[in-house]
Length: 119
Image (tube, rainbow, N blue to C red; front, side):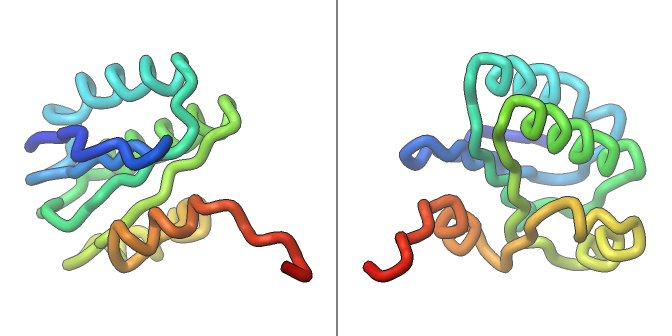
């Protein structure tokens, strides 16, 4: 399992999850992300296109990340969920906590400022 910083697009950090997310693979990831959030990162997308599986601990990591971002006025969006992950997010209720998008581009667009009414 690897997490890697795919890109920073404007002020949105896109992270690609590759493999599986569980207790063995996620601790270093979450620590480095928390440092970025504490330093001012406000917008993040987790790209799950290459994520093969996620354990209950991995789900907890996503919740921890969400909570840290919210405390700092930020937001994390999830993109490209596939396989059993959409069902897992629905059964656990996490689909109500996270905004989930079919791909990274749509998640990126969701971070764009809303146009003012009447313009």
